[in-house]
Amino acid sequence: MNNENKISRRKVIGGLGLGLAAVAMAPVLSAEGSPKPLSFAPEKLTDPTTKYPRPPFNGQTQPWPGLTSKMNPVPDHGETSYKGSGRLKGRKALITGGDSGMGRAAAIAYAREGADVVINYLPAEEPDAREVIALMKAEGVKAIGIPGDLREEAFCQKLVAEAVKSLGGLDIVVSNAGRQQSHVSILDISTEQFDWTMKTNIYAPFWIIKAALPHLQPGSAIIGTTSEQAYDPSPDLYDYAQTKAATMNYVKSLAKQLGPKGIRVNGVAPGPIWTALQVTGGATQEKLKNFGGMTPLGRPGQPVELASIYVQLAANDGSYATGQVYGAAGGGGQP
Ligand code: NAD
Ligand code: MG
Image (cartoon, rainbow, N blue to C red; front, side, top):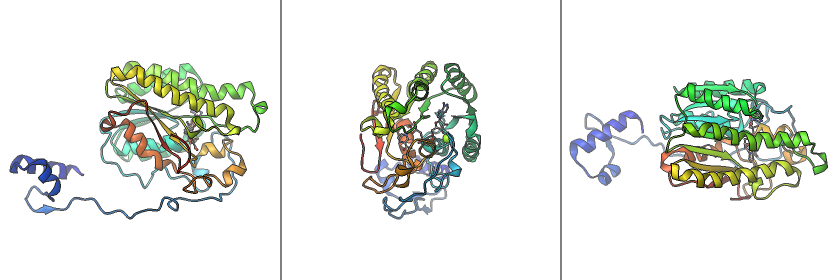
């Protein structure tokens, strides 16, 4: 509903003294009193099995961390499809990994819902980040990029401090950045690789949430990106999968710790989603060619298909959800 309609509706309620239920059923009256139809255009039913590309996909690889624009097909993060309705007006959000994949979908959706947003990403991802920032700015909100490596505690602290300063506060933290590399055997994982995965996926959220907490008022929301891997790990994701179990677990313990303070903590558990992470060592070429093909919907998810979950978990009307993990995995996986 646009502002004009909101004002008209208020005038109708105040002026005519109608009951709310009656107003909800009636067509909205314009200020002049002539009937004005609600502006909800009917949408066609879409078949989720054919809504987006299905395998087989071309084998492809990019140097990590990869660029979403170079993927074939290019993922849908909601650039042209996500429509907002002011659900996050006035909110101030920090999203890690906001340049691509789920983080980008969340960033675009948050901006379209009226939130000011800071995204973090790696310096090599500047081209992806610039695209997201331009899309967010087009919504008339504050959109700020802060590049840097989350494996450093000092950077995580600086990131939060700069986000708070540039947004004038903080009330949504989306800890979404992640590192995933496929290794056939545990014997192929070096201590350095193991440490890299743990630092990115477990330490960084710990450091970021610690730094953010003193700024979060009651009503704020923390959202972690976990995975179906937390519940049903693949054999080639030994190190990654256990970090996603840790994410699911911290969501639940922190929700208990912060519930009495009025701060909600929830997780999103994606299934196979078509993102840069998968074409930069996250999946084998064999897995990539049939990516998502094993799910009941027969295809991978697109980042935009999770955007509304990130919105729902941050929005005021989701106020009884805390310690929850919401999934989107095409019919397989948990929760
Ligand atoms: P993505 O590659 O588009 O996003 C991951 C982002 O993490 C990168 O864009 C990068 O900016 C950030 N990142 C990685 N290491 C970093 C570091 N050291 N410092 C700063 N930023 C760093 O891929 P995605 O699939 O959208 O991943 C987002 C989240 O979704 C991750 O936590 C991932 O584990 C999770 N996830 C993905 C899938 C999937 O199938 N794609 C499934 C389940 C969960
Ligand atoms: Mg990226």
